[in-house]
Length: 64
Image 1: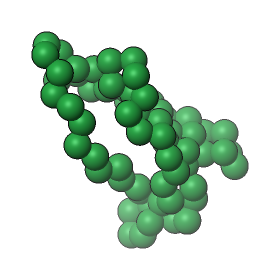
Image 2 (image 1 turned 120 degrees about the vertical axis):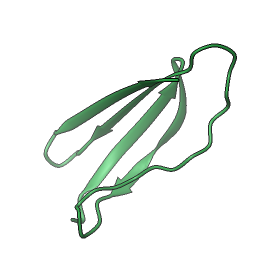
Image 3 (image 1 turned 90 degrees about the vertical axis):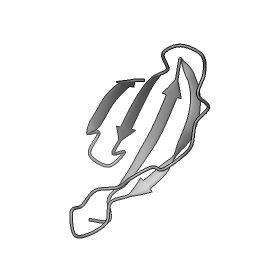
């Protein structure tokens, strides 16, 4: 808890969110809640979170 993560979310290759989030109790997780445009066809989202203190990096991909 209390760890800051730098988060970037790209939609179809364009950055749609770039900011920091802090982990919170009880799970030690964080969330990003945003509404994004529903483009024609499949939208691919790539989220990357980096902990600048530890260098740990997490990456996830979602196609809708």
